[in-house]
Image (cartoon, rainbow, N blue to C red; front, side, top):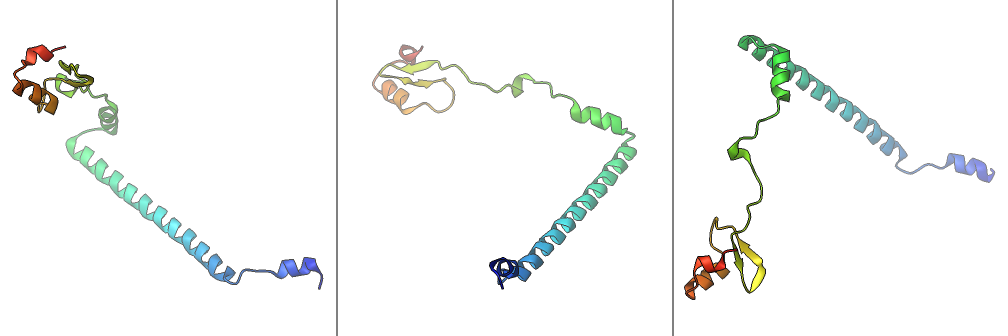
Length: 119
């Protein structure tokens, strides 16, 4: 036997098991895909039935789903400008909303007014 023939005959001790597992993985992935497709088809049928019972067209549903949500006053989310600043540490601020920070409480209990901390 020459070196080339020895290389051709080489195989891993568990090669058959690895091949079998690879085939099983492929089979399970295909089964998963089939189950997903069946679920999607069932869902589409339910939506079609619901649309029909409401007298709604698929186009109306698509338009409603793609419609941009109007931002109302209550929907606005953003930062609120601080109203008060700690004179000893300018990084500490408070908007005046929510629980008072410790530094505000300490200054108020020391007799300072909230107005004296206003920005």
